[in-house]
Length: 243
Image (tube, rainbow, N blue to C red; front, side, top):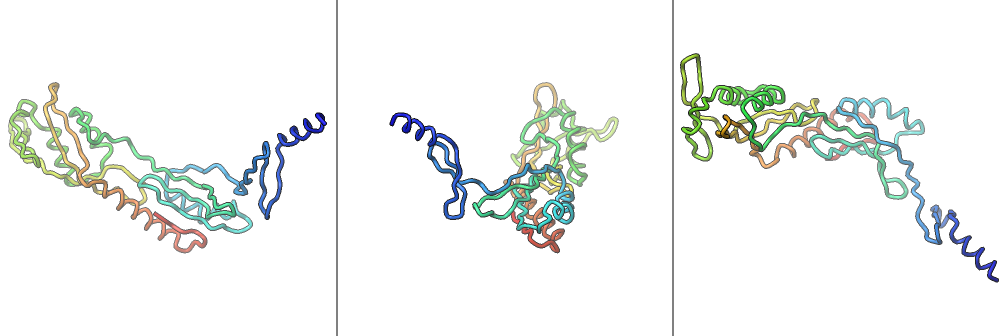
């Protein structure tokens, strides 16, 4: 009796699988768990929308020789797009491609010293008319006149050098429209409103850019990415684009 009871208990502890109503269940200590029939793969990480489109139009057929499954392209943000499967029998999805835009780290909402600010503007922003104005003011403002700024809470007045011996007062426009590198290169960079501010930080002039559109540019950029992909994939079956 004791031997039989021990064997029974040992048997309960052994893992086993059973098919119940067409689904496989895994039992461990007599606790059933549904076996996931979704064969997962490691998502391929890329950095451009072009590579994503090329994969869907070409390479994806090689990875699914038995026929293309229903797939969804999800634009998760202005910097990330995922290619995932539709639901399998267990109502789960698996991720095939993860496209992550490579963008520089730009210091916003933070005052920078004059040199760092100018270098950031030169290297990480596309040329616009407002960029030229910001660069001119930030690069030529006279430190000894910082205390004489006129500031009405919207715009600032600064004295800048216009030549070897000439100076003039200028009104710094606000907001300024700038195009920093913030998304995939295929769709162009968004034009964003910024508040441009300057101050005397004790060791010289410091400058800062503060976002002024409440993040609306992110919504517009996601929409542009989705429209770009819909156009590029319009002739591809079994692939939907969502944002």
